[in-house]
Length: 236
Image 1: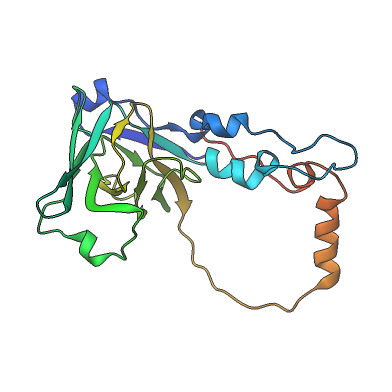
Image 2: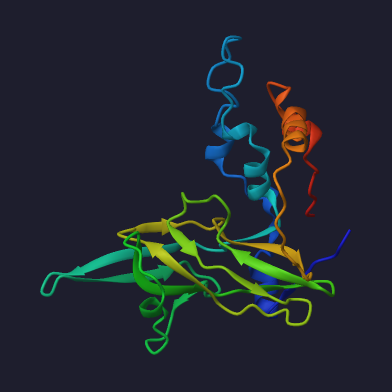
């Protein structure tokens, strides 16, 4: 088992900001409420939902999550004189959780635009940084499959074995969102990845091999992949 050590940026963060925790503690309530099957009739035994999709669950439980340590309030304000919009924001008394990029940074003018998000680029102020074993990097991503969140965190990879400092992480707010993002909301996911040299190649289609693998999974109505293929991943 490999060790990951989370380092506080200062003593105030150490005492007030919760460190990243295993992602398995942040499984959303909407996922927990999804039934395993659409219909429990014996005539329709294969109508499984995403609840039985182990790869989907793996995405929710892989790595570590940094949670928001205080409430943040956003309000979209329209200037009716010229039809433009701006965002006002504030946070409950705590260590500063976010900021907006300096005017001269202008990432929003360089990235492809989406009407789903407000153009202003914000950034999460990181307070805990991962120290990884030699040869490992940290993949920072928006919490996987969490499209229900009112923001989207951009991705990045940092060689955190040699440089355990991530700095602020940019994110965009969903268009016209007004309200509170509560403390405890997942901000971003940290996934340790091993640096390796890779070389790609192309293989011919092997029908016999593919059918054998497929049969090993599909010979069961349920849990074929989980019981015959899947390996448990552990993040503590």
